[in-house]
Each structure stands twice: as structure tokens, then as C-alpha cells.
Amino acid sequence: MEDHLISFPVLLGLTLIILISLILKVGKRCKTTGTTSNLPPGPWKLPIFGSIHHLIGSLPHHRLRELSKKYGPLMHLQLGETSAVVVSSPEIAKEVLKTHEIIFAQRPRFLGAEIAAYGCTNIVFSPYGDYWKQLRKICTLELLSAKRVRSFQPVREEEVSNLVRYISMNIGSSINLTDKLLSMAYSITARAAFGDKCKDQEAYIIFIKESMKLAESFSVTNLFPSQRWLHVISGVMHKLKEIHRTSDVVLENIINSATTKTDGHGSLLSVLLILKDRGAPEFHLTMNNIKAIIQDMFIAGSETSSTTLEWAFSEILKNPRVLKRAQAEVRQVFGRKGYVEEKYVQKLKFLSAVIKETLRLHPPAPLLIPRECHKTCEINGYTVAAGTQVFVNAWAIGRDPKYWSEAEKFYPERFLDCPIDYKGSNFEYIPFGAGKRICPGILFAIPNIELPLAQLLYYFDWELPFGTNHENFDMAETFGVTTRRKSDLFVIPISYNHADVD
Image (cartoon, rainbow, N blue to C red; front, side, top):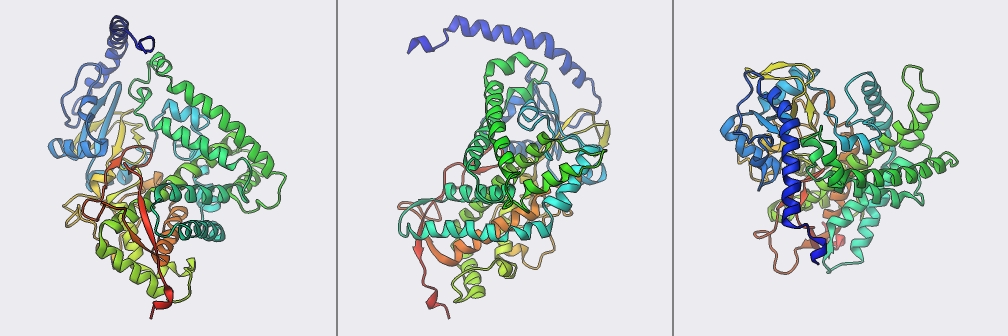
């Protein structure tokens, strides 16, 4: 046992080496940041480490909201070498995401994204420029258009039916709904991406999940990007490279297989391969570009929809009044048909309000995806220097009592007959972001949430496991690529007889 432990003298020696290196090399970088005049207010800083200690002991989006109450809606943090500002109000969010959206349309260059996302050639982390604009155009017009998303309806219906079948076989037993929702979401995305199911699909999904687990750690890479040796000794970079190499081989096999089939016609991969073959000289898609885009679809499409589904169902179970009303609506609309048709889901106004309210309280990425200021500018009377990373606390904004009455309460009725939508034009409600970098997959995600939620409410009544009720129901979060429940959602399905519906 003792052979596996680092002795105190060795540990002390390593610590001193790290500190001396950081003082000599990082100090210069921090001084440069510190000389910027008229910075937004922020908490006191430690040498070298800056404001990092203020984030310890709580989830980042929770702690940042508390700090913003003291230091204001535009707050400066020094995160190691990285200068950052945090936006916590709709007014400042509008300045950053709309008024000065070109200045803040850039993404930071993270080493993890460089490795996993094929040199940041995906939609999420690609630098703002001509390549990104063409990529965005392809997503909007080809990959994720309303017409394309509608074409995946049979896939959604079949995969949701598989979920319902599994639940029906486990009536009266406690089931892990978290696992089943995530599996369903990945299956929908995989079939939309590749066409028919393929033998390497499950292996690729496993590698995607492993990559995300590594990405969820608050990597030293992002705090001290110039200290490459720290990244090496942490072991994370080596593991990420290994996973990426293996997943790349699997994805290559999937692509090679897809090019020899005809049943993948209409899949996202087939569309990308066609665009690659007929590409214009000024915009040529490479195979690595295609892989990066497919990877985006898996992470954004699957994680966002399954996380939102999980939180929506959790909030419904915690609020019996909401459960009763949502079930009554679904069962009234679909009556004795015995099944839920996607084309009529749009009639479920209260269900839509439930999803909107869920996204208000539980945006999948509570701090959105970081942006970077590429030109020094003035926001709210303060200077934001070029190179500053920008975090928008969409979670805090969605709970701002200035804009939302009883802001902490789950109350879907607030969205009935309300014009607020997901498009990012109302800055008090930006679960998918806003401006040029708004999530392009909204049209893909929402049907993947609506249909399964409607069917779960239509086919079954629900109970919580023994010892759990709506009052002591655990709603704790965990922070990662998406903000999920800290504990998996276990529920007990009860059979419902639709012949009793009037």
C-alpha cells in the first residue's frame, strides 16, 4: 500500500518546483493582465492562482451568482493565467451577445478541444471566420433544417417505442430512468447521423462518453495554458489522445461502411459526404472536418436532450400538481387512440410550457460555452481586454427575480400565452445562448424531448421508490459538460388503462 503513496519530502519537492516555475513564468502573464485599467469589479486574488479559490466548495454557476450579487452583473475573475469576465444579467448579456456580438463571437482555444475536436474544426469550437460561417450555413440549411429534422420522425418514434416497451416490461419495479433516457437519446442521434444501425455504433458512443468524462474535469490546461508540462504530468492529455485515436479508428470504419451502403441515404453523414464530393474550391470539407461535425452532433444532440428530459421529469415528479395537469392534457389530446403521434404533439401547450420552464431552471450548459473577446471594448462602462474569456451565467439569468416572479419555483403556467421562445431574442431566457453562436441544434433537440416526455406521461402513472416523496425528492446537481442530476433518477412505472378515458 505504502509503495503507491508519494512520500511527504517528494510531494513537497514537487510542489516547490511547480510553484517556482509558475512564479517565474506565469507571474509575467498575470502582470500583463493586472495592468489593464478600468477592469470590472471582482473578488480579491491570490498570487499566481488569482480568483480560483473563490470557486471552491460550490458548483461554479451557483458560486458565480453569489459573487455577482456582491460585485455586479459584469464581474472580473483571474483564473490562473486566464483573464475572464462573468455576465449575470439580461442587460449585459444583450451587450455581449447582440450589441457587440462580432467582438465576442470567438471561442477560446482549449487544448482538450484541439485534441478531441480535430483541431477545433467542429461547429462549437471552430474560430469565428469564413470556415465557421460556411459550417453554420451547412447546419442551418442542410443538416438541421426543419425538413431534415422532420425526416427523422420514424427514428424518434421507433426509439421512443423501444423505451416504452422496456418500461412496460418492468411495471411495478424501480428502474433507472437516467440510463434509459441517455441510451435512447444516443440511439436517436446515432441513427440520424449514420442511417441504419451499424456494428461500431455502440463502441463509438462509449468513446464519446469517455471523452466527455475527461473533459468534465476543471482541467489545469485551461487555467495555465502555457505550462504544457503540467498537462503532461496530470495524465489527462495522454488519456484524451488515446481515446481520440481509438475513437477515430472506429469512426473511420463507420464512415467507410456507410459509403458502401444505400440505406444511409438522408443521414447526416451521407449529406456531409455529398457536400464533401461536390464542395466548392473556397470551402472544401475534409474527412476530419466531417468527423468533428458528427462528434458535435453526438455530444450536443444527445446530452442536451437527455439532460433536459431528466430534469423535466424530475420537476414533474416533485410537483404533483404539474404531473396531474400534464398527464390530463396528454391523455385528453390523444384520448383512446392508444398511442402518441408526433404530428399532434404541438397541441400539447402545457407540455411545451413544462419544457420551457425546465430549461429556465436547468439550462443544459449553465454558463453556456465560453466566448473570447478578440478586440478590446467597453461593456457597461468597464474595459474588457482582447483575449478575455467570457462566461454568460444563463442559469443565474433564468432565476433573476427582477424578471421572473417566484423565480426559484417550478411554475410552467408562466409560459402559457407567453411569446418568449428559444431563439435568444429575449435575453432573460437564453438556455441555448443567443446571437451568432446560438446552438444550431435547437430544432433537432426539442422533438427529442417532447415526444418521449409525452409518451412517458400518456402510457404510465408514476411512483417514487420507497422512502422518497415529492417533499424529500433529491434535486441536487452535478457540474460537467451538461449539468445533470447528482444522483440517477429511479422511478416506479404503474400501468395505466386508457380504456377508462372518457
